[in-house]
Length: 113
Length: 113
Image (cartoon, rainbow over all chains, first blue to last red):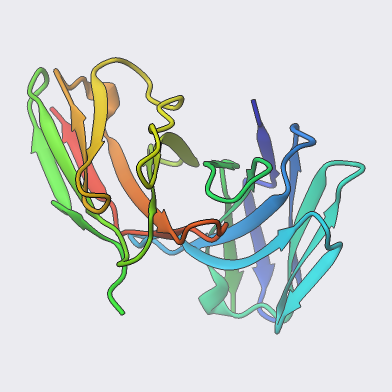
């Protein structure tokens, strides 16, 4: 089955710096890769996703890149702000909509002002 | 509109007791998922329902865990003879048919003493 590895487990940056979180997956059939943000005590919120027919997707300060050959994808946050502090999870899904997401173990991002 | 709701928000139970956790998906979402999040860990897939199809139970950790979905809407996750290792946040998510995006509920925090 699918296995998702996520690095780093913790990341501390200064406000205004960029943050990059990387994930690798094992199942070449996976074709949907979402990123979730979870603030303390709250539910995971979908912040961006990418499908395997696209190499990069941007939404304001966040972007996701996908390298299908290497089976890795990354989340990029530019101009970080204190409110970006949270746990970020990557996930991968098998080759059809409506299948279970397999999650990485999360990255705790701390942005200090 | 209303998001995914779960009840109770917190549940404390004694080891060996049975518990029932409830999930109300977003109206119109035919796919429903249960995940478990242990302290400091990622989200672990448990079970998935899609319409009237047989559920995907491949993530259930033991036969003490079961889930039902009545009328294609509300779902109940039941844990029999609870153990301390069952302590976790149980998250429910739902999605539209044939789409990838999953939306999470606030979770039920289960503590087994």
